[in-house]
Length: 278
Length: 260
Image (tube, rainbow over all chains, first blue to last red):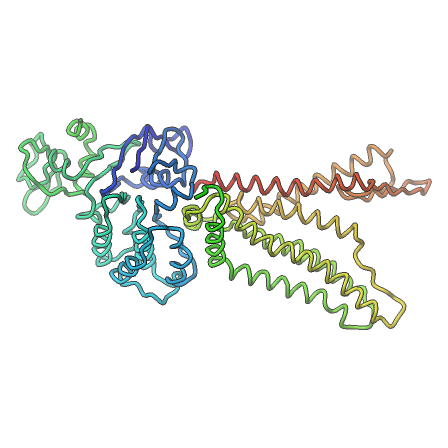
């Protein structure tokens, strides 16, 4: 479980990246952390991983304070940064030296992910392409079976088939005691993968809800016209009218479009907050 | 499991560090040893006396033991120089102490034997060279107190470079060397000025910090050699040891507080 309590962070006290953030993330879910470039997604994830220290407030991850970087905390959390480093060794050597640190590492699971991602086994890690490296570290991270898995822009550098492989492999690795948090600005990559969304903008969490709740309160559909429709939060012209996000006053079912949701939230923060008020 | 230090985890981290940097350590270490032997061996390969061959031994002390050793030490925390490597290292499930002790151990395993090797080889080769000399000239080895002075100086340099390797993210060796150079110049200048003040301004002074003073007066022509007593000198030489331990401690704190 991840619990943030009035967390503030910034690279200087005068200019905070986020202020008084509070949220609680539960295991058994894949959360998508969305935000514009520079909104502080990576910094937030790095605070959770214990790589950056908050200016105020607290972070509790599985009962540990990340800042202390205790071994028991680190063996139950895996962080995949946007820019990854892999040593100049083969896959087997990598697993041999790093896997023993993770008590729940599953070798068979790792080999299965390697196979699914179609990663060549004999190559040295440094000889791999950027996308292959990303897939390898993802495979390793999933096989560690840590209770918390943090990913920062994991689909950057992946080609289109690899992105669908990524969604398939990650969704299959979700367990009831596992929490996966994926930060990205490429919202389409998270389609059919996440079951809850967190959007940060202007130093604050705009929404933090399951997609089920989002679909209950907002409707994603096509409207012939949006000019005089007060319900509309965001609309985009399409071939058959307007693809729009509007208040779901009729409780109709619809599929959440993450990109449109993100645009609706960032363009109409006050109205969205009002719609999602407890 | 102990959250501060665990032998099994330490061993695992040692293997990980060696897998990542072992090749580089071996190459650098091997190169320095080859240079050392190249500089020190010629003295026993000829029967004729040459002052240059003796100077090569001094060169080995400066170039291999001090300069090479510090260069080797400057790589101990290179993984914390870039965001991706630092992230990978900080996220390894080992304690902060283990992450500090492993590079320190791998460093000492090389630095201490190289220093002792130089010292042993120097005295051994000088002995062999003198026994095979046909002429009347004989080589004199580096005086024991001079060698001891340089070993303590080496400890101070090692401490600074070790700290610099975690303190500076980029060009750590260059930045540490520049800083160390200016501190050394300032410290020596203050030391010399102090000697002039307390010795009634002699004509010439030769002294290095923490060592004996050699003074010449004119027009009297008198000269003096002011050495510390054995106990004073021993006390003075605790400073480099304390300094080295302090730099290690600061490096550890710096590692603990490292943010990426």
